[in-house]
Amino acid sequence: MRSDPTVHEAEDLRAATAAVRRHIDAAPEVALILGSGLGRLAEAAHDTTTVPATAIPGYPESTVEGHDGQLVFGALEGTRVVFVQGRVHLYEGYPVQQITMPVRLLHALGARQMLVTNSAGGINRAFRPGALMFITSHLNMAFASPGVGAERPAAPAGAEEASFYDLDWTRRAEQAAQARGLEAHRGTYAWTLGPSYETKAEVRALDRLGADAVGMSTVPEVVQAQRLGMAVLGLSTITNPAAGLAAGGLDHDEVLEVGARVRDDLMALVRDIVQAADA
Ligand code: HPA
Image (tube, rainbow, N blue to C red; front, side, top):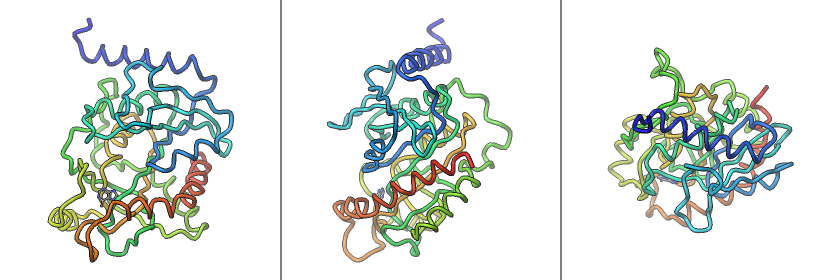
């Protein structure tokens, strides 16, 4: 029995789900996988319960010191949410199955909507640092298998053509961004493995392929969520012009600084987006 990987994975997921259910008394509706710096938003949630990764069998442990993995369940804007903290990336050496495991877990716990945010380099010349980009499509330039769980339902016919991103939710989020006076665009996100930034030649290539922004996360989780039938909203903060598109080199401090500058606006917008989730 245990030699069948499908059975194995389903059993592991059941064990993880049962472990989390012992800590919480209400199912989450919206899963929040937020980029670095937005972790503080969890402090704004009410009635929170924190479940450490170490209490969840099979949950990926973050290798980044001080970024212990945990799930924070609570209410934000009257909606049951769960924050995934201590997000892990493929470039840290995890099998992609581990990166997508929290998505399978949150779906099993009841979440049917997922917001994913990230930082990205801008390729589209109209995107200034500090602007936001609602992701409407993506390019998998890591050429990695999305690694979705064996327990997923078979991909529906025409799944490749179906959008990965929920356009109605995105439209409502765009209106919220506009109401806040934020610069927000739509675009295609190219996922590269990282952890190094792209070369100028790679950015030129991505530009020709139709990418508007480039970053090192998000796509595995989105593919998993879509396979499970979850509604997904993807939001990038453009922290810098991608390599070669601005005078001077790409400076990691600049990336962090721009991220910090837009953080408060972004946190307010994430609250609007949660509120718009069930409109
Ligand atoms: N490239 C990849 N990832 C990033 C970038 C970039 O220019 N900026 C922020 N994350």
